[in-house]
Length: 144
Image (cartoon, rainbow, N blue to C red; front, side, top):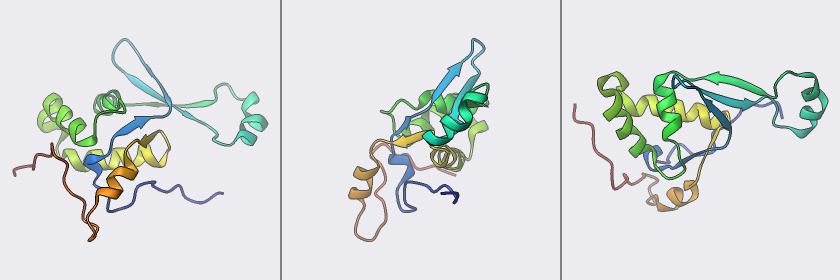
């Protein structure tokens, strides 16, 4: 009940293969700033008890330009590997280390329940018996 929120995906799932889908509302302003509207309460009881006394039922989370580009790339069809490539093309060296940044960002979105992964079960089922995930077909290794 009051415990720590947990990730839905396991530690052995290849993040680059997952296809994220937005499950909360967002607003985009004319200047390109994206604001994610996170619900203040997930429980119906708390919404009824406190919600009517509050100005807004949402937290407003304003994203920077990189976060906004990631959020806009989440369409329920692209996997995170493709999103990483889009960000590299758009931001270049500024986004590096890209996969580490995306892993942290998507973990936060997942824990906060702002996204879900549409193909999580499929990716888990594709793993080999040793638990090592297969790289996605469109994965490009970072040459250092």
